[in-house]
Length: 469
Figure 1 (spheres, rainbow, N blue to C red):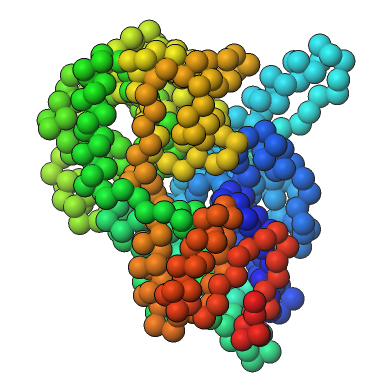
Figure 2 (figure 1 turned 180 degrees about the vertical axis):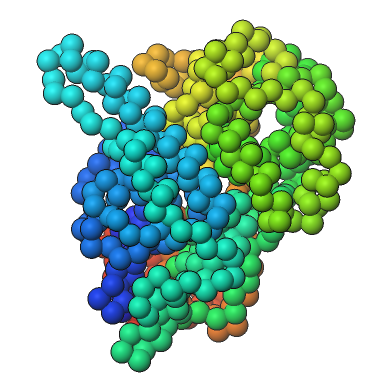
């Protein structure tokens, strides 16, 4: 039995790992590679395995960097089950169909240009029909219920506290009388995140495949983060500009609405018009409403006291493109939450074109920005950016509010790891090299048995972990 790492190895996105047990192949995640045109072009490359020969897929959560190539896997021949939490399955219908729709639209636009140049047309990565078929293959598995996915392979989902339905994946393996337990974190959430429960502790493992996105830093204290949000909104009110918040449709958008509702009077939000300008985020918010049993204690209490419409009476859900375009006629008084989270596409780009060059505007970055993304260039302080083939001067004030990240920071990840009684060995995935190396050093101080940094094609012999790495 062995583990092979192919995606999110030495980088954050493109989660994709294979377990080989008893002649069976179990795929853990199949995510999109993100971070600019070169990174995204890699999504079209052949898989380093034959899709039709995969026996089962286990999906940790719904974010596109973990799920976004599943329709491509299906398109290329995978017909088996995809095991996921019920909320993840519901999000899949939204996010994968949206991803397919965007891909088809981009291909259509590109082909108009190629036709004028006499070039052959390109195909979208996959189509909506592929996304729909993928969702049909999803089988819902709730937290805490063991599920056999292949002979000698049994999974149990635990709450990762990252987004609704996100899973830590416990994998019990047996081959030729040898038993092992692998734990895959997917993405690990922060402790004390609103709405969600804390990441669930696990007592023992033989190997932990652990994310390291923020392995080299600590987030700002949550109370300080909320105070910072209040200050930014007050500053924006003083300058009479708009506030733009690129946010992931699942997780971050819902937390922002939660915080706005909770602090509505304190932050004088009645003086603003608040827009959730993302059809996908609107649908995802409906999914959040369907799973109140997954909320933490505070969110449950708030949910029972009032409905969101009353908490935010000035919230507008912008479903259509025309509704989105009308927002850009507002010169002040608008708080706009729009996708995409890394500013690589979507409606946020149109709002940037109308507001980035205005010094009274405020931009709040609330999530991880991959290398090569527009969001990363804004965070890094670029004076000019390119949007839709147009150069835009950046005069808006850019705020990076790290405390709202859905990922745990270095202290959160160490706290979770120290819940293991046996201090198991660790393979670090889902992190840029500097972050992974810094977290490796911290794990060594926490008495990890050994720490292995991932790389594409790395193979770990699970039957002989004593001799690794």
